[in-house]
Image (cartoon, rainbow, N blue to C red; front, side, top):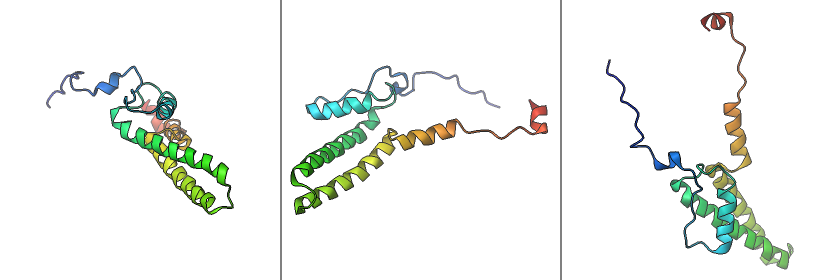
Length: 133
């Protein structure tokens, strides 16, 4: 049987040893930067990697659209045509934000599923299993 190759760190992804948070792009506006920092710094430094950048930017844009629509809704009210249009925008962005946060793993329900997998209760051992231990 052939021997397994010795494990080296030469070909590992650089994100494996990442000790700092994923840095935002320089082109972010102040409000976008604030949302970026809120999301990225809510997790461990190595949680988000470079491949998450596009999804993070999508989340930020959806959050900004939703916030702007909510502020405008306060001005127009629910009884107006513009208010109804804004409610539709808020509804669609809320659904998209939920999906995006699930993909990023920052939604509470995505954390609960992960914890359920790792904290699963084990069935009691049979006599045979105890003999093997």
